[in-house]
Amino acid sequence: MTLGTAPKVSVLVCTYDRPEYLQRCLKSIRHQTFKNFEVVIIQGPPLGDGPNQTDVVIAEYKTRIKLGHVDTHNVAAARNASLRLAAGDLIALIDDDAVAPGNWLQTFVEEYQQRDVSGLGGFGKSFDGKIVSRVVTCDRFTQALSHSSEEIANIDQRPGGAECYSLTGYNAFFDRRAVLDVGGFDEVFAYMFEETDLCFRLMERGYRLGFSPKTWIMHGLAPGVDRDANLLP
Image 1 (cartoon, one colour):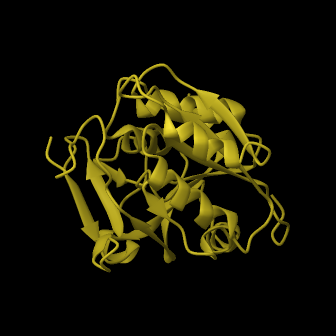
Image 2 (image 1 turned 120 degrees about the vertical axis):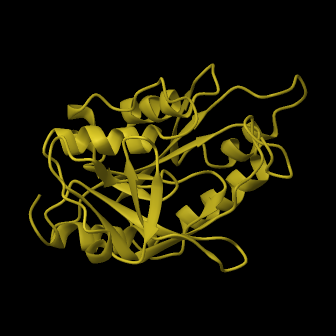
């Protein structure tokens, strides 16, 4: 990719039964200052038998999105389905319970073009302003740590390394070809660590990752199949 050219970005959103969160997320994506992007939504099965209000939200955007479906609550399977529909040079991951500031994609693209990496993670805040993640590392026993900078994390990115940068799935940016090169997401990881596993496999293949300290996102931790309204398992 030539420095200075505007790559196409595919924004990938996986969702089900969380219409109010999805609506808020899609509004934030709609108002991005960076314009060369598409939105791919993968909808999972509803939890109940009543009317699916997620359909109503998606219908508002049907002329501006690509839509796919999965028949299981498996986030890795949903991410793979979104990959199959994506046409961008780069993919941007955001959760349906997250909200992106208007410069989210612009900041990611600008930093990506200045660095020799195949993926960038962003930082996260809760909606009350608390910092929930910065530079995240993870070892092969799923021990994750958050650091204030890449320099402090001091990861040795090489095949066989003991730990890697773990780009959080609600705020991450990857070269689509690199993700496809390592086979996408491993669907054994139905809910957690699917993005960390991807990062390890990218590192094993010789790809480099990093973090963009200017790229923040607000993340809300909505209830789902794995946790209730009180965020308990």
